[in-house]
Length: 404
Ligand SMILES: Cc1cc2nc3c(=O)[nH]c(=O)nc-3n(C[C@H](O)[C@H](O)[C@H](O)COP(=O)(O)OP(=O)(O)OC[C@H]3O[C@@H](n4cnc5c(N)ncnc54)[C@H](O)[C@@H]3O)c2cc1C
Image (cartoon, rainbow, N blue to C red):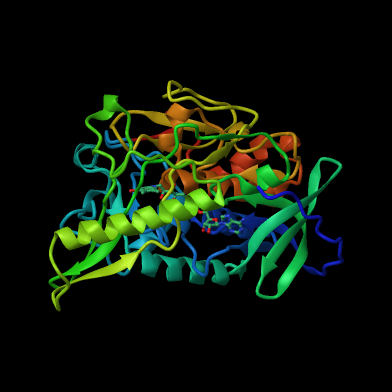
């Protein structure tokens, strides 16, 4: 730190007004925007990159983890399933390594479904375009290259968000805000309570290569799973990264790039048959900053019924656990009209590795988007009315509702 500088106060234009502002266009943001638009809201999605999908596309994390519990029961529905199907509707990626589980695309047979989890590998470039076209067709306005850099809070609610993009700095007047930045950036800017992932992330260096005409994902630096789930891969480096500070994120990106190249060249030189194809254009961080919500869900709360459940998720790491997600994990009463979805919901550290994955982000995104269209005060939202909206779309709220 080299002292302080006082920014001169200046007037900026109010560029747009909307009902629901979705901050960030990863899987959570896509789901939230779609959901809010389907409730009739005027939705603006601001994304700092120039593509949708976040980690799942720009970060090359293209395995849509399971919508089922690994014992033949589907637990996540509606937009989570719609986006899975959209992601492969022109064909799946790398079907040798990740065959499309056909048993989930025909009449239910629990014995077959118990053998094959409902997950796919998709093409990230295709999904980014398909999601963009879907959102536009449903009336969502997308502003790319737009970072939300500040908020104005009046009487416990956000009235304006400050954005920066190619047109300069301007304000957006909002009724409600869905923080899908993955890092709880908007909660942090609004001075709501948030928590960092103290342990930090291991280095990931996932990339795509081409080999004999195939476009292949190389998962270099695999997951940092707890020892109780089996032997984790040896980390690429001893370093850990918290993922919320500019210089550290830059260093992480540089370390990741170097690891990609080293790993690739270990397999041979470039040739007409083999080439390094795509590197991530966003840092591959898993858990960074989450909100401290009205409820914090723990990994021990498997198979527990919550009266305010907004949907269910499974554990991608092992068969069996099912979790109902309480609505209270998505907001904190400290800022009335702010809600989150995706990898930043209010969970304990043990639970975080479960809820950070793509299907879970879609489940929480759908609920947060619908809630934001229905209310600008989440602490006093009629949760039963929200649940009815979700159920009418095909969401199952409770484990007891699963009929196979
Ligand atoms: C190495 C690695 C491997 C993984 N493997 C898998 C896997 O195999 N399967 C799986 O399902 N999940 C996997 N995950 C997790 C999963 O990909 C992500 O957690 C999930 O996609 C997060 O979605 P999200 O929408 O919550 O956040 P993100 O995808 O992070 O999206 C946040 C979006 O917000 C934008 N944004 C951020 N701040 C601002 C701002 N201030 N203004 C405007 N825009 C902003 C970002 O550019 C981004 O597009 C993996 C993650 C990593 C890092």
